[in-house]
Image 1: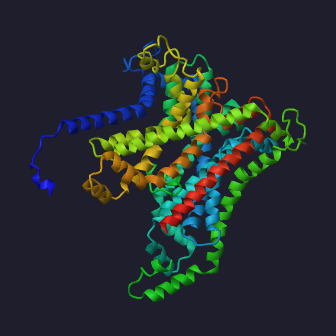
Image 2: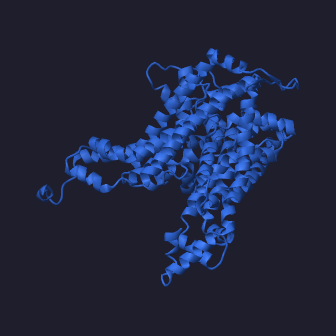
Image 3: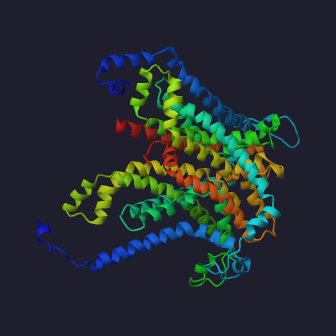
Length: 288
Length: 318
């Protein structure tokens, strides 16, 4: 009954005010920590380098200049790199979309012996570091004459993205109301047409998430691309960006502009599909 | 299936259930899952399992790619060399230090921000969206940005550093072994912590509010609330994240490769980096595959812990 004894209105205590201030300062600090590197990339892109290349550099941009973006396309083969990235990522995406629909349906809607084993198999393959297969796959591809070609590279990228794609889609399939499935079965539909006509349309966001994850994991991928491709005109943008660094005369604003162009699509798509992607990354263990 | 099937037709549940069961028991039904799973198993086997098997096989051979000679069988020679190589044990030590530091830094950053974001405040939605930015950013540009921020000539990181007493000139951030390791850990954690934060936040929001109320009535201090209510509520999530974080940091290649290449003088050379350097800088494929097998065993161990954890969770949930 202690609450009744309190007056109805109390002036906020100094402790509370300090707490509030501390809270907002911490939030500001955390936000600064997460966005500063990105902010600095944008500033270094848009500001002429007479400001950036001096010490100490100004914290806020002094002048805005968008020429570095144009220079990237005229002075460097950025368009070609992006085209290559696009091709690799699209092929990986198609493979993952087709296979993850099958895998997710087998893990979600159906009951069968070996289902747990199949899930376990996916979990283990998902956890293996890429470096473990890079030497053998290099030797195998070399023997088969598959080095320096885009489709074999995207197949490897797809193999590493596939388990996560299957988990993402499985979680979405799991959320399709069972009444819908049963009603269709009663109407005489077979299991495949249930998948095709009922589950897939309801799972559209999941399919988009799978497309995003598989496309951009191949888009962002660096290790396989740098080892399995050697000719410059097949380089994807992830590798191309790093070659800009070794060209000593690449001005910093072009270098940062290239990073910005490369990042903008993955950032937008990952952020907009984050709920689904995180549920797949934790393999359904934690509800994200 | 049976309990869901009964939900269809309230008018005649038994009949509907029977029809559903008949359909699902059909011959197609028994073959279908295997037909769906088989292409995936074959695909993953061809591109991941088979290469790993080839790698294990290759670790018992001497491989000379450049000379175009067929590989020769050398038995355990590569492993003998590995176990007696002080460089290998150095790499193991570096990997353990790196992994443990990333788990500590990234998870405590994730936990603290999750606790922060679990409180109501203005602009929380915006701050949360900003929090996810590092997670959504691709690795290669992240490495590029930090190389620029840490540039000894113009890097903006020198501005706060030179405010410290005793720092008179710009710092060679990636040339000093301890600092290079610290930065690789910080950057790996910067990229990873938003994900942990979001997962922990979801777990925090699942802790029943009544527990807090009850503890407060009993006069618990904020620290006691955290120790006896919050922590037990998110324990399983934290355990899971420790395993996920160790996998994530163990796999880390791009940042280390692009920022230090394993240097200075091996200070940031993890197993993954050593495999790369041995194979593609020194062209010693056989020795690299042997180190790869060691790396494979480590990842299997982590995967094993993860699976046991999952099984325990599933049992607890049931």
